Structure formats: structure tokens, C-alpha cells
Image (cartoon, rainbow, N blue to C red; front, top):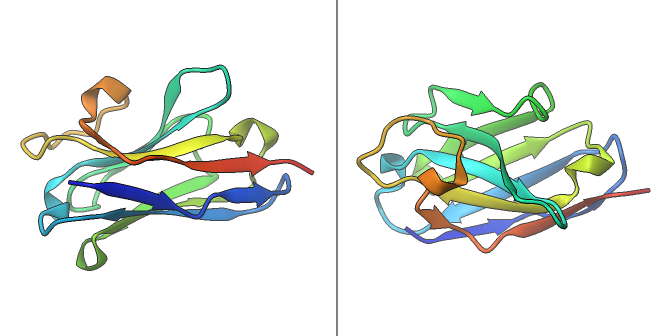
Length: 125
């Protein structure tokens, strides 16, 4: 599966932004999907993940209550709605997918096999 992120940009603290991830292929619903981010000088960290059906989600403590992950199987797309953004949310955001035979949500980057190129989110006044 090929993944392409979009929707990044510059936003003021307290603002909102919606990221999208477009997936190629006809088997989008066969993948557990996730959002990760990498701030300058830091490692890649987990943000949110969603099961194949979209029925279950998981969030990092740092974004819980502010970010919402969702997916649309008919459109082969996943989204991350980000509200109440903070300067510490500044990072390159990546969407990722696990291999098809995995069904569990995981939070480690090493457990995801397919990655997009990333989209930059900058939170600054």
C-alpha cells in the first residue's frame, strides 16, 4: 500500500488542523493504520491508531482529548483532526500501516511497515 499525507501547515496555538492520508489499492480496509510524528531533533513518536473496521482507536496521552483519528474505507482515506494545538505539537506527521495479517493496534514505529512521506505541522504565533 502507498500512503500520501496532506493538510499540514502553519497554525496558531489553540487552532485546529485536519490531516489526511490517502491510500492506494483496493485493500485499504485490511490495514491497521496509525499517525506518528517527529519533532526536530527527536525520535518518531506515536500519536494515534485505528483498527481495520474503525471500531477501536488508541491515542498517546499527549494528544488524547485533542486529536481524533478516523478512516473512510469507501474513500481509502484516513484523517487526523487536531484541535487545541500547542507549540509542542510542531512536527512532521506521518501516516503508517501495519502488514495485512496484523489486526492489533500498536504504538511502536517498528511495528508499522508502510509509511507516507510526511507533512509538516507548525504551531506558532
